[in-house]
Amino acid sequence: MTTVEEKSEPENITGSAGTTVQLLGTDPHSDIKLLQAHNMLEAMTANSVIIAMYGGRSKPPNVGNVGGGMEPNELDLFKEREPELFKYYSSLGTLSATDIAIIACARREGIDESGFDDLDILLDKDTGKLIILTDYHYKEGHRVVTVGGKFNSYNQRPIKEKDEIDYVDWVDFSMPMFEVYKRLRREIHGEMPFSCHRSLSSG
Image (cartoon, rainbow, N blue to C red; front, side, top):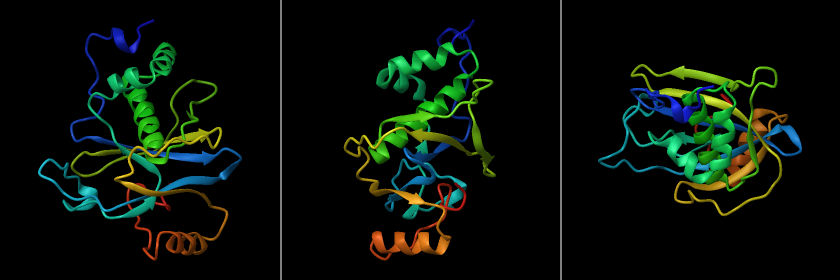
């Protein structure tokens, strides 16, 4: 069996125009409560990646799923941060290098943005393959992937990306959407959530 580390020609895991991975993460005790984060306004810099979803402008503040851009060295970061998990996923034989990089990115961004670190990324129980909930490309080729995750406890470390995220909570999506928006508007000081690639409506 060939593992990720043994492949002679590595996959281009991010694609030519980059990949964003978002995590649809469920509450430890309720599958209708989803982890949501408030992402603050991100300023444009000379090195900012321009992607079509923001029309070449700064990413606006929004509430939605945790997630973010996949790094070109995502697999190396995974090996560094979580060597046992990297070894486990590499040994399954059902996942491509890109699949493992998606898992790594979902875990890295999900944990760093929320602090909740007791997280499993969902695989198909019968085939062992990664469950991709949504997968689409913008016109210029940027890929956006959503995967499912289950948080097993409320164990939480300090939020690493506190310069980007100022609010995380479990949102009950059995409530009418206007009630969800009303509550979030109240809790993030009057600012209405903005729908984008990590939006409340897209999951």
